[in-house]
Amino acid sequence: MMVLITYDVNTESEGGKKRLRRVAKQCVNYGQRVQNSVFECVMDAAKCREVKNKLEKIIDKEKDSLRFYYLGNNYKSKVEHIGTKESFDVEGTLII
Amino acid sequence: MMVLITYDVNTESEGGKKRLRRVAKQCVNYGQRVQNSVFECVMDAAKCREVKNKLEKIIDKEKDSLRFYYLGNNYKSKVEHIGTKESFDVEGTLII
Image (cartoon, rainbow over all chains, first blue to last red; front, side, top):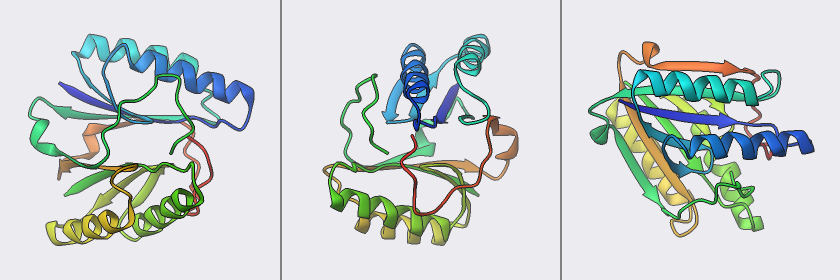
C-alpha cells in the first residue's frame, strides 16, 4: 500500500533543525521524497509500523507533527503533480 | 471528496516568500490547514478545478510544486496524526 508521510518540525531551535534532519533521513529509507516534507512510501503494514515508531521517537510531540495518509494500492490515479520535480537533498534545505 | 493539497514554494527570494503567502491564503479559502504546507479540503470537482487554477497561476513552475491527493469520501479512516495540533497562521511562519 502507499502511505503518504507529511511532517512539520519546528526549526526555531538548533534541536529542531536536528530533529528535522533526523526525520528526513529516516523517511528516505522508506520511500520517495516528493516535496520537502512529503514522502510517498510503498510498504506493508509492518514497515509502516516500523517507520512510525522511529519517527515518533525523533519528534518533539509538543512542537512537531507527523501525518500518515493511507492511500491503498490504487494510488497512482489519486495523485497529481504541478510544477518542478527537482530531487531533494535529504539534509533538508529550508524550503517550504 | 477530500483533496489533500501539499506544496513546496522556494522562498530563497522575496518573490518566493510572496508566492508562499499567496498560496497559503488561497488554500485557507478551500480547506483546513493541518500542517504548514498541507491542507485538507472537502470539496466537489468544480471547486477543486477552481483552486487548482488559482494556485497554478500563483506558483513559479520552475521553482515550486503543488501536489493534489484525491482521498475520496471515506477519508477519515485514512488519516493518522501524531504530535502537536497547533493552529496555523495563514501568513506562514517559516516552519518546515
